[in-house]
Amino acid sequence: MTYSADTPMNIGTRGSPLALAQAYETRNRLMAVLDLPEAAFKIHAIKTTGDRVQDRALSEIGGKGLFTKEIEEAMLDGTIDIAVHSMKDMPVDLPDGLIIDCILEREDVRDGFLSPSVTGIADLPHGAIVGSSSLRRRAQLQHRRPDLKVVEFRGNVQTRLRKLSEGVAQATFLAMAGLKRLNMPADTATPISTDDMLPAIAQGAIGIERRAEDEAAAQALALINHSDTQIRLFAERALLRGLDGSCQTPIAGLATLHGDQITLLGEVLRPDGSESLTDQLTGPRSDAAAIGAEMATRLRPRMGRDFF
Image (cartoon, rainbow, N blue to C red; front, side):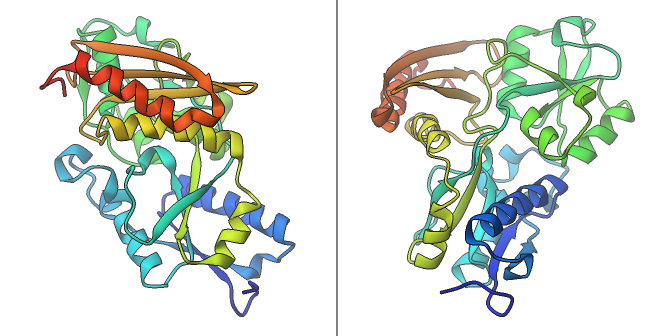
């Protein structure tokens, strides 16, 4: 199949400004490698359950799949051909017939700290209110500063910035990758070193999902796949799979490449931040997924039965 204005590639995405920016980035990369005009692609903004329900934590309403269900249904019924996702939002198990074998080059993996009054976590006053919808960030913060009060902070980047300006909380966190993709001013957030706050699994990476039997999409997406990022995610998502990771489980992980070697750092925390367990493994990049699975095997006995 050849994509054209008459038979465009239909690209599905959530409707937030960040999700649309990621869809446009994907479209622009495909336009370049396929030498096709913009008219050969059509972007469909699809509202998901996770976008509609803003007053409760994701862990209370079903977890990560709430950001993908309606989009994946549109792909399975043929409304869209591919879907653009933030990989940190993706469950490790996909619906039958769908695969992700294209990952774009990773952006900044770090979390960003945002506050109108202080420049870092250590500067927050005793008992300060911090907003976050991420169980990982909440647990990491409470492990480091158990005196702080953490409140639910759902919404897209613009919504969270508005809540912060309205004084709902004294500080919050956003992924640096999202801020950069939205071309936000450099001083919007203070980057947090990964030594101080290990990021979410796959943070900063965009994944493209497609129907397994769609050869035209497969050939097009292969041209924009970034293999180094893909290999890093093999390790990180294998760790997540091995720990049964979901939005109910505070898990962090980051893989880095050094020549033909890959190093994986992993962290699991009790939801209240009272305990943090970490591990590190290095091995051949060809064994990325096996390294993630091995780390999960090493961490599980240390966690015990009721860790999460």
